[in-house]
Amino acid sequence: MNAPIFDNSYTALPPRMFAQVAPEGSTDPQLIALNLDLADRLGLDGDWLAGPEGLAMLSGNALPRGAASIAQAYAGHQFGHLSPQLGDGRAVMIGEIVAPDGARFDLQLKGAGRTPFSRQGDGKSWLGPVLREYLDSEFMAAAGVPTTRALAAIATGDMVYRETILPGAVMTRVASSHVRVGTFEYFGVRGDIEALRALTDHIIARHYPDAADVSELLEQVVGAQAGLVAQWMALGFIHGVMNTDNMAISGETIDYGPAAFMDGYHPDTKFSSIDLHGRYAWAEQPHVAVWNLAQFASCLIPLMGADQDKAIERATRAVHGFPDLYQAAWKKRFCAKLGLPASDAAVGLVNRLLDLMAKERADFTIVFAGLSDGTARDAFIDTGAFDLWRDDWRSSGPDPEIMARANPLRIPRNHRIEQAIQAAVGGDYRPFHRLDAALRHPFEMREEWADLSKPPLEAERVTRTFCGT
Ligand code: AMP
Ligand code: MG
Image (cartoon, rainbow, N blue to C red; front, side):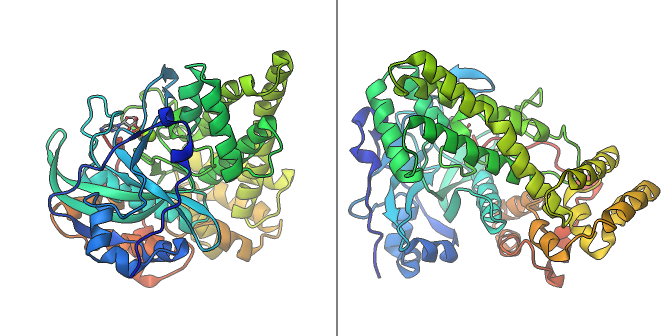
């Protein structure tokens, strides 16, 4: 049985980029979930993780030799307003590991207690957000979307005080890195060119090794985000808090918070209780991505050569590249949902279908999955309009195999997550484990999970979601 072998690179960066901090630890840690598939992919020893030393690490009670134990500094634009000082207020990065295939990952304990960046917060997390992020992020990975992942969930045995007293939990998050747009902004707003340069070199080496210079880095980050957001859209995913501190430079989905998947389709759909004006509604996400990337670009401009006018021009061009890249990715993803190769004619069919769906708030997942077996029609009231569309679509020769790979049968529906959380708070983790198992096979038809595909009943419908705080 082997402890993880840490190979930390972030701690070699200038010390003002992070704070050394130990996790607070847990009174009576109990393992809720251990993701053995992910452990295997990372080259971690599942037996060790499940044993006493593993539990001590995952709960923050005792870290193995070589662990880093830091909180990273970052800033961020939250709903458009700059917060120059955010940082890991409820997470401790315990180190980096290198998987057997050479890929490097951060291990982070989310909800591990106070850090120098906690401000008024307690640094903790209750069970609900831990289970939600676990389910959402593992589903995303199963659906082929770049994302941070969940290695473990631990019940701490400690109570967390929110509006009520709730059971505390810690999630071990795995990310190809935790560097955010906001990490660059932290040094950008301070005019700390040396730190910006160190961070940029780190990111190029770690994620974009073939970027020859800083403007190529920017172009590649723009490309990664364009592809990512197109994948979100194709699953009806709404991140919910696309602040710049919640956008990872690696191109992975990060910080699920109030994230949710739509049931009934409408482009204006939002869930987050704090997103009053729908800044982060489903259809706004590509626009917000550009806005965030512009913030990233402005941090990089000082590094883009002595001729700053030229640098601004190049940075602007890179950010303005987003719409074309995004459109191409969107086209590919949505045409595939109809089983068609990307073409303008196919896009016309996609848009006609989305319009029909929006009118009736037809279920996003059920309509697309139901195109394969003919059940999509049942999701509409105006079946006449749908039939006209369907005739045109059928005559364009859709490929069922492409559709089967593009349209999940199951998504982490809000009401199912809520039910799993409610049961877990009462000590019953079975609904959580069942949902977790089912969401690992989103494209596979299985009778035993048929109920998990269904949209919520009116009484079950979740209309608002909350940040993890
Ligand atoms: P978010 O946008 O929810 O990911 O978090 C925004 C900022 O608030 C980050 O700097 C977090 O570390 C911090 N934060 C959120 N919840 C807590 C908490 N319970 N204790 C301390 N800091 C927190
Ligand atoms: Mg965040």
